[in-house]
Structure formats: C-alpha cells, structure tokens
Length: 340
Image: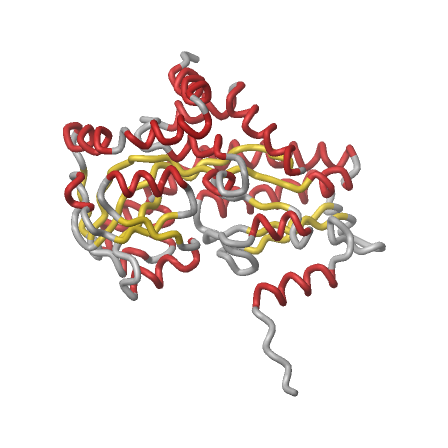
C-alpha cells in the first residue's frame, strides 16, 4: 500500500523535534553553545522582522558567538494557526505573535489592545505596556507556562478594500480578513461587515482570489506583502494598534543558564527599543513607496469621519467588558492617559 503524504507542517514539526533534541537545539560540542529557534509570520523588511534581526546580531555579539538565533520569517516554518502550538510542543523556542493571538488561547485580557480607537498615538500604548497593566498582562502567561519577555510595536492599522472605507456604511456586506480575535470580529460586525479569520500568510492570495474583499493592516505589512497589487483602495483609518509580545516557553527559559538568560534579556531589551524607534519610520517609508507606486488610491479621514467610525464600534467595548470585567479597561485607559 502506498503511504499517504505527510502534511507539510506536521512534517516540519517532526523534523524539528528529531533534529533538535534539546530545548535550545544546541549541539553538545563546538560553537554555537546555544541555538534559539525563532519563528515569525511577517517579512524581514517590517518593523518586527528588522527588530528580530537586530536581536540576533546583538545577542551574537554579547555572547561572543556562543548563542545563535536561527530566524524563520514570513511563515516559512510556522504560520498564524500553529506557531503558538509549535512553541508549546518545543518545536521552536521563541515566537513574536501579535497580541491578538493570546485571546484564543485563554488570555482575553490581551484583546484590550484590539479595541478600536482606544489609542490615539503610540506614546499612549507604550505607557500602558511599560506600566503595571502591561507587565501584569505578561505575568498572566505563566498560567500556561509561557514567559513574556517584552512588547514590540508595528503601528496603527488601516482598512483596505476595493472601494474607499471612510464611513460605517462603506463596510456593509464586505468580507473582511481578520486575525483570530473576538474583539476584531465584533468590530467588523459592528460595521456591518463579515469577519473572515485567515492566517496572515494566506491573506494576499485570498484578496487576489476575492475570497475576501478587504482587510486591516499597518502600512508596512500592506506594502511588504504586496497587498497594494490586489487592493485598489487604502483608507487611513488608524483605528487600531498592532503590536507583538516576545514569548518563550518556561521549560526553555529554565533550561538556559542564568548568565545566558541575562544576555538574552539584555539583547532583547536593546532590540525592542531599537525596533520601536524605527516602526514609525518603516510605516512612513512604506506609505511613501505606496504613494509613489500609484497602484492604490489612498484616502485620508477627517475628524468627523473618524468619530463616526468610533461611534459605530462603541458596542465592541461593552462586549469585551462583559468577558473580562470593567476594571481591566478602566486601568488600561488610565495607563494610556497617564502623564509622563
């Protein structure tokens, strides 16, 4: 009987487990002494991709080449649908998922970051992340033996489709690709659109084949994934924030020697600071490139149009409060508004 083909991702899991028996996948002899396998879903030339490359470079320098970071970008190894499972199984050592990914695995509090129009600028986001609320959210991950090492920016999201999206009625009937998040799904339904959950790596093809009509993305993702080739209109809604958390499994973290954990923490802190500093620049450069390409019509929204969209999505806040309680939202708003 002829053997059935093994699904690609299952095969990759098996190969990773067989070839890399230790938590860090390091060989017993010779450099590097420790190898960290890191998977993410976006292109290298994005704020996240660049920050993680910077982390690799800094850690190699700080460790004298004894700790190597092996990066698999652009969903080449694992995608949205299985990177968290791969981390929990030990097939990889570190991931940088969007904050939306934590809701479906039992941490709905992270979906605070998905609320539409909660933040007006990244300074507010950073105050929330770096303060008590953001650190308590990372601490929650210990419930599933995960260790949150820090936050990383991408930027604010904007809506795209094959028509301008400047008013609530413009969304009516559209199939909008989203990542798995009850808050984002509720947001789309509040705008009378139909949310369709798809992995990031499948989004461009789904747009090209008209499986979905539109999506939401920071401009750097929109540009590097060439979505401008399959979407005629980009509306600068800046309605929501997209950020990431750097996460490892507890067993991998405990496997590292204390001195190695210190080096990883130092390199990562430097890389996240550097990455957050360039995120705005990368999005600004992507917008300039997009304008120069002439491939997509770009629509700016005025204050009245933004307020109409904000009002149309107010029920999303009520839905999240019903699931996590009002205290988290009250504290998040307070942290974002705090003076520095």
